[in-house]
Length: 236
Ligand code: TYD
Image (tube, rainbow, N blue to C red):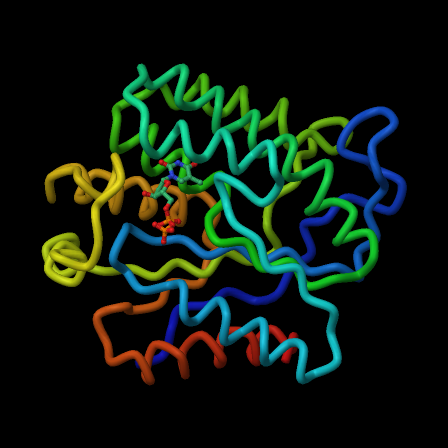
C-alpha cells in the first residue's frame, strides 16, 4: 500500500535563527525526522534501519529519542515513565527534557548537517498528554512555542514526521506479554484510542509534515513504505 506523503518542504528556520538568544544556529542542510505512533505500533526497528540506510548513503546520523537523548533528559524520562504525577507536572517535565535535548543534541546536529532521527517528539505530547490524558491543548501549545521557539512567530518542528498508524486493539495484542509495561504501556486500550485520535488531529492540522504509514501491514511492507516516503522526498 502506498503511504500518504505530502510534497517536500523545509521547516527549518534560516541560518542564524537560533533556538534562543545565544543558542546554536541552524543550517538548513540538516534534516529533522521524527517517528510517532501508539505503543506497539512497531517503529523502533525501522528507525534503526533508516539510520543504517542514511549512513550507507554517506550522511552523518544522530539517532535519538524522547523523552530522553541527553543524560538530564534520560533522568526525566525515567520519572515520566515510572512515577505517578498530574498531567501538568508530566508535561512540564517532558518539555524540560525536550529543551535540554534540543539545545544540546538536536540543534547542534542540525547545524552540522546531520540527519536527526528522533523516536518521538512533540506530537507525542499532544497525543499522550493532550488527547490521552485530557490535558489542556492550549497550555501544550504555549509550552511548544516556548521550548521550540526559533525567532518571531516560528518554532522548530521536524521536517518530516513518520506516523506508524495502528489500530489500538492490534497494538495491545502485539504488546501483551512483551515485557513489564511502563506507566503508559499499562494503560487500557481506550487510552490508546484517544492517543491515536490525537495523532490524527495533529496530522490533520499539519498534513504536509506528516507521512502516515499503515503499520498493520507486514514488517517488510511497512519498511518498504518508510523507504518510499524518503525516496519521494528525494532524501534517499
Ligand atoms: P517509547 O518511545 O515507546 O519507547 P520504548 O519503545 O522504549 O517503550 O516510550 C516512550 C513513552 O513515553 C511512550 O509510552 C509515550 C510516552 N511519551 C509521552 O507520554 N509524551 C511524550 O511527549 C513523549 C515523547 C513520550
